[in-house]
Length: 133
Image 1 (cartoon, rainbow, N blue to C red):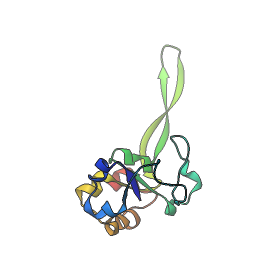
Image 2: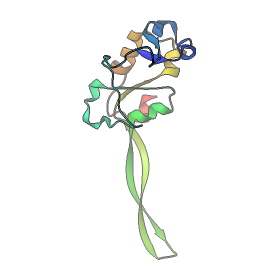
Image 3: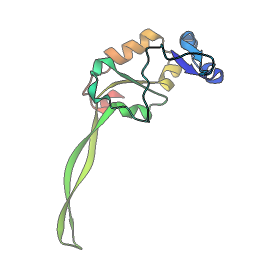
Image 4: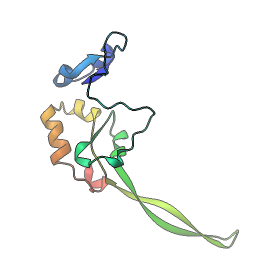
């Protein structure tokens, strides 16, 4: 289900409106629902099987959360202190989780089946970020 304000619910594509319910904690008991709720702003997905999680984000830029940066160690010589210093640099990123963003869902007017196909058949865990887009 998608819980939000009626104004935001009106922005959903028609194919998803059946999932929408207004969020009103004062008049509805949400405690029986089988949805994930957690305190704080972060959830550690590392303990979950990648087939059990799809990261849903508002925009493509935020969808980068589904990718893990690849690092390389490089070294730089500092003439001031005549020392060689290591530093990490990001060389790319690989897919760690399946993902979808609402901008794409709206733009492509995706149905549930299209979202499933996009996340399960078009995405490969471990693919390079550049190959994913």
